[in-house]
Length: 311
View 1 (cartoon, rainbow, N blue to C red):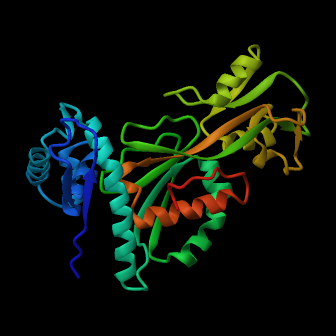
View 2 (cartoon, one colour):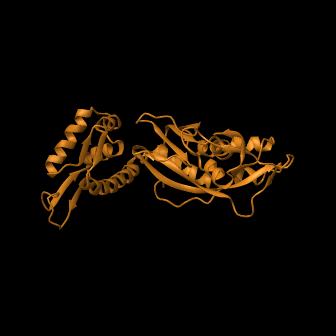
View 3 (tube, one colour):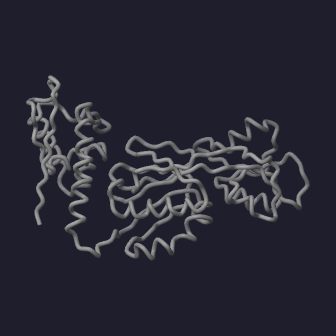
């Protein structure tokens, strides 16, 4: 079945952006605008669209000529949407959502998301929270292969990969959208069998300062750091072994009978856990399925933020 969807972009203001009062836009044109804006270059958009980059350039140039205005500012490092294009993208994304809803209505009923989804996040999150919930994901979406990567900073993925990350301190890159997920509380714990002293275990990473380490520097400047590691799960194990006291997630420490909580009733630190998602991944069915599973899983342990990005 061939579906043709057109949108009329109208305005009553007198502005050179709009060559005439009504402009008819074809969905096939809008697809190219969305692909370029999400991947920040014609070359990457071509890989997503499975066409040559010259085809992408030609389609965008033809649309710019028809509209009488530039849609993208070209730079040596990529392209950026103009103000006009940003307004057009709002319309394009609504049309895309309508188009997807329509195609789902006429598609084969038993079609389900499939393929590889790569997720980078902290090893302790994978071990304690995500892995126990994988059977539920497998039951709902047996054709999705989940690739969990326990790393502080994710490796670069190819543009066609369905890959995203869940992070505390890492900032989103230019092509990524940041989606708040939940707050994670931290308190100070020590082994019940170890003597109290000024020895500490902390999380740290050579490429950037983790918030747990900066907290220790700010609140206990004279602390004797006996061990640094990149993951809260490793810190927890070191505290259990009696290496020192540490600031660890309450979900790891509060129910561990081997540990004693040294903080008061209130947590020492609250960290925001966020998803960093490349724009071109946002509408992929396999991503949306995994992202919904993640929010449902996190909700079993934390208060999850409400958002409309993944639903």
